[in-house]
Length: 449
Image (tube, rainbow, N blue to C red; front, side):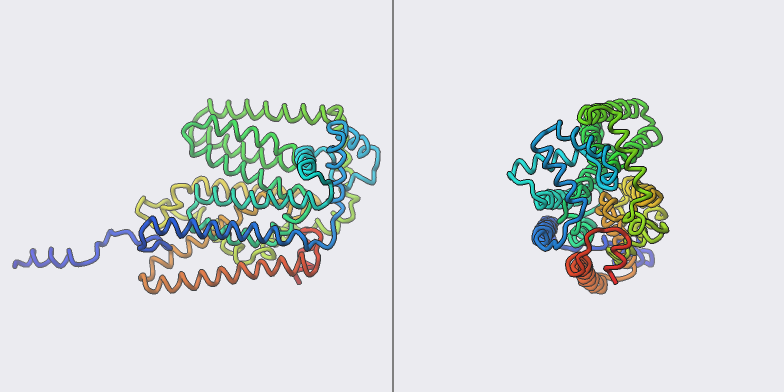
């Protein structure tokens, strides 16, 4: 055998230099088995998340003033309908003592709560808590949909595990607040925005987006911000990335029409647009004199951002890694370990920009340092944390062979389960044992020590 022939034979026996490394957490099991295992894990985690929310409904020791207000407002609407809304607005504008409490213009939530009260034939405080529990579970389902569609199954499993035990998400799910509903509706707008960006036939998705977004503006004032940021994201995509003025005009036209319809309905329900303006003016006037808002929801911006560490320290670190990895990692070819999320990198980038923008506006708004006010960010927070873990595992996989990497994976899984258990213990400590009645930044700091 000649020298060249021997070299060719040796080269065939050696590992191919261009062979792409295996995906970080992928195994050699058949795809059907892996799919079944992932499905069972997702179902088990969803079931666990629902059980955790349901079992903590009965351990609330004190109800907040906001819960009393929402229950009373919805009860009056249950009995009097639209006339009840007008009555509530007249009473609100005439009584300065009410201005520090939730205004009756949040009809999207109040009508939903009133309908739910009629369905169960009760108008007690617990009815609103069950409604919040329902929307909290819907958020878990939306996280799975968003994660599987635009991240990957391993990131989705990670995010669902930590969302299940999120201290603030669990606290909101047991209270008669609108934050669980707005969080679910806002998360659906983020998901719809991602679908619109990916879809070839965008019209049907845009119509659904407009309908839900218009309703979100009636749930709470920040619903307009969520809707506006998602719409701005889509407009940027249409005008800059796709160069499609037709789609941009369609979105602006339908979006404007939806807003007009919402404002017209709210004006009709309130007995005139001037009454709505008067309510909003009173809310603005009352904030500087609201002792609770001044003492518990004010302070330097970094303490609000730092609340993420109180809620979930492990995911906070992974979130920063995921954000930096998305911003600075290079686009990979189709054979790269990162290809599972690289094809949706622009969408993940957009979600991170949404998180940063929404958080920045909330931080800069006076007297708004309350973690439940950013409930729409909970699921994206954990998903981006999953991206951070994915980047770490991708790097480790490139350095280790299969045996040692399997050991690392086992250790990471155990560590994540322990970290999730610690997050749940934070919920028990802060909201059950110490009976924290709110999620304001000062309350979290005081009760977490």
